[in-house]
Image 1 (spheres, rainbow, N blue to C red):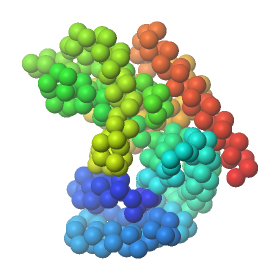
Image 2: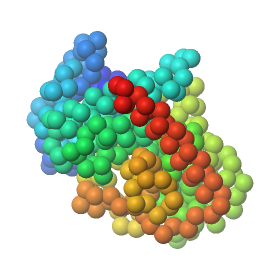
Image 3: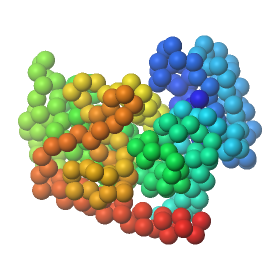
Image 4: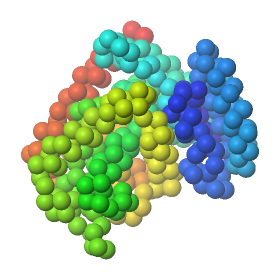
Length: 329
C-alpha cells in the first residue's frame, strides 16, 4: 500500500506512473496506490485515476482516490507526502510554516492512528525538513528513523552540475553531499565526491582544479536551482522532483550501492558532525535492509563547518516557530 498526497498536483502527475510501472519497488511487486487530495481537487483526481487505469499497468492492483485521511492512511507500507501549502506571493515564511504545521500535524496523527508501525514516510512538501519533523512528532508510535525528507533533488542537481562541468554523465559522479535544510541555506559539499575519468576514480576537487567555482558558483547554482526552474518554466520543478522521489524511495527499499552514499533529510540524533539533536537535517547516509545509517568519519574543513552550522541555525529557528504553532494548533 503506497500513499501519495497532493495526488492531483503536478509532481504527483510525473510520479505516479513511475511507481505504478515498477521502477520504484521492483518489477514483481504488486501495488495498491492510494491518492489523497483536498476536496476541491477531487474532480481533477478522478481524471488522474482514469489515466492510471488507462495505463493498464500490470502491477497496479488497485487505485483508491480519496479526500479522507482515515481512508488514505489505513495499513500503509509507504507514505509519500507531496501535498503542502505552497508559498504565495507576499507570504512570509512564518505564515507558510503555520499553514503547513496544521497539515502535517493532522497527517502525522493519521499515520499514528491508521498506518502500519513499519511505514516509511517521505516528506516532499515544503518546508520539507520542518514538515517532516512535525509529522514525526505527531506520530509518536512510529520510529523517528522511519521519517525522511527529500534532499535527493538537490543531491541530483549537484551531481549534474559537476558532470556538466567535466563533460561526463551524472552516473560517473558519486558521493556528493547535501547538508542541512532543503532551502537556500543547504550546503552542497563535494569534498568527498568522486568522479570517474578515463576509467579511474578521482576526487572532484582534483579533477576540476577550480576551487573558486566549487566554493562559489557551484554552491549558489545548486542552492538557487529551484527558483531558476520556476523563473524559466513559470512552474516548479515536477519532472526532476518526481525522479528524485523515485531514487529516494528505491534506495530505502533496496539499499544503496556498495561504496556509495546518498543525501537524505533524517533525524539528527546521535550524529558525529556537531549538528544539534532533534533536527530533521540532510546527511550523507548508506541504506541496508530498509535502515539508514550516517556515513561517519568524514573530515570537515572550516569552509564546510561554517556552511553546515548556518543551515543548522536556520533549521533550529524553523523548528522553534513550527513548535509554537504545533502546541497551539
